[in-house]
Length: 558
Image 1 (spheres, rainbow, N blue to C red):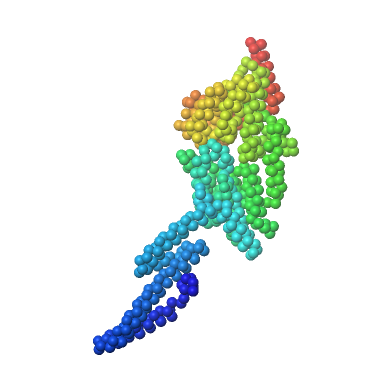
Image 2: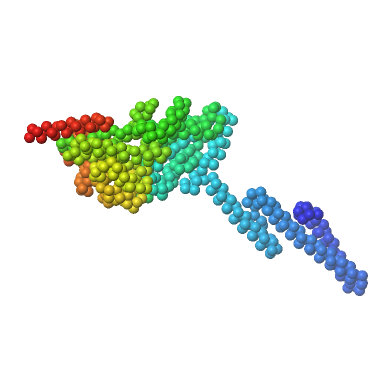
């Protein structure tokens, strides 16, 4: 008989047998003692036999107790081997067995904790604590299968942070991670019990398993958008980070979760193209748009080689004299099938694909080359050229060296080049930002903060920056006369610039009233449709030639 088979012997019959033996032995012992006292020699032998019987019975009882403990241990080991960690062994009056049970219980508890921790790590995102892609896909698959079985449906929301890459590059990955963690908490609160997961990066999903999935999804999307309109307080920064949402509702043709996720992703892309910070429900016609967007991505990668990119130039005017003092280079894409596209149609794609580096280099070279030609038309009056630098370009190693090479190759005077940076670009790693800015200033170029007033700059930080110029965002200029607060804000920016010995340019001047107000508060420079739209090089040269002719006539008359 094997040990395992012995452990499985029913214990009750053996206990009854052993009990009967002990009772008989006890009676026999009493009789033997009486006979021995009467001098019966045979009783001695009988007594010895009875003592042996009693000893055997006692050993059998001890073995039964040991058998029970070992049997419990065997069952526990089998359960641990099968992955069940909940069983615990009881204590025993046998010291060795008691220590063995205690050690086993400690081991089982430790294994259970480790297993639970590993299971949590395998199905949860370490940064946010939300379910990860694996857990979401499993839950999504179960929900979709159940919905198909009963003729119902589910919905999925696909969302990400607008311009997260720019923010991440500007403020640093540490701040970006903290923003993701803060956003995850808001999503959990806003979705009110629906499964929220982080797929990776800044991509999140929400599973809607409800009797009315489309209506519920729209409600949840509205709650999420509302929650994200409030600023995030992260690492000392007050960050406004909107999200775009695409969502799709399952139908009979959605056989797999991949089909539904693809539709939600297409709707998300549509939400971004509609201006970001909104939610879009997938429709059948969006499938055709996704193909167009794919073609746009591929065509953009070849736009530089094919010579499809072009620059237009919007004059910057002295508001006191009306004379053109400079121009801003504005990028356009002359798409072979879709015509001339503005940056809003493709810059986000360029940033996501990394093409912004090559495009930005082309813009810098072309703008500087053209600026030299413009200056030759009016050689006696300095003419500046303003070029936008993206966050990705700014953080790219060797920026100052590349700009220096362009200046040397084109012959542009460094002080005539104005590099425009947004506030968000300047709020990243402060020591690194200051180092890059000082390198650029060492080249002799001018530095400008574009769209001033829409970012998150603090005055204490602003006064440390080696910046030469502030550009008032056109949203403030456009509301002059219609919003009571716009005038004081613009005046305050001009006063701030004067206090910091900076120049000011007002963007988006479109009416005579706006011009007069800006003149009255001492704004020196401006640009906008009131003066000129963005012009092709030949048209801008025409403006310069006309001014040059006017100056010549005035000199002749004097």
